[in-house]
Image (tube, rainbow over all chains, first blue to last red):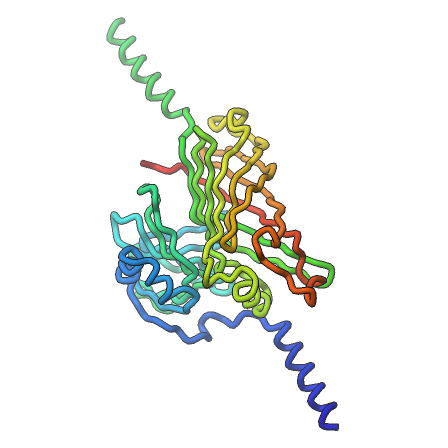
Length: 142
Length: 186
């Protein structure tokens, strides 16, 4: 009887795990609160160390919305950074939170929550180096 | 008349430069689709933040994509992809560097759809292999749309599928690239 109950419980658990969708980003605890300029400087100074610290972590980054990009399929990318500097924090919006970006305007100071997925160092000097965040949601706007 | 000819010459020079194709194009919002669908399971993911640069003069093309940025429908699949298969903590990025082999056939200054034969080195999971694909370059309104499908074997990149899940995850994988590129200024 106990074995049968255990098997049923395990089956439910297994099924639940198998079909589990990704948790909403806003329900996940963030590991770091930082600002866009500070975060970028950490990566530019020592990207090995910064990658070890931040890669795969949920972070909240605050900064000036330098650009608001919308691709041909309607997905937004928020670009946080400073005027005149090509390097930036690029925040690709989560599908469930994408429409939050439609109310934003360039120049606003916002806080974005997302998963830090990597760093693209620019070897050409033409594109700027970018810290990349995915699954992003707008946490606050000023 | 002489003054008119000088101004006409300047006007034509400016107009000609305006009609010339740009040399370099880029995107930081390229789409990369990953599919390792097998008999028992649909294994698909999308990344919407690929970076790509192309030099239309030489046909050189490069793209890079963060592996943690691939979004799967199921959380467990995403976790296994990152932790067990591509080991994205150790190897955060996949990169391609190659050439459009028939670059001379593509008229970058003229709107149209062109077949592009792409060949180059793909680095994934710390392994680099030569890959090739027949893709398309669509020239429209001063931008380029690049589409290409690369068929790869995960085993070539030392990504092992355990026997237990061979019916769920295919070793034959398709990586599809869809990049709308704009001219790079500077």
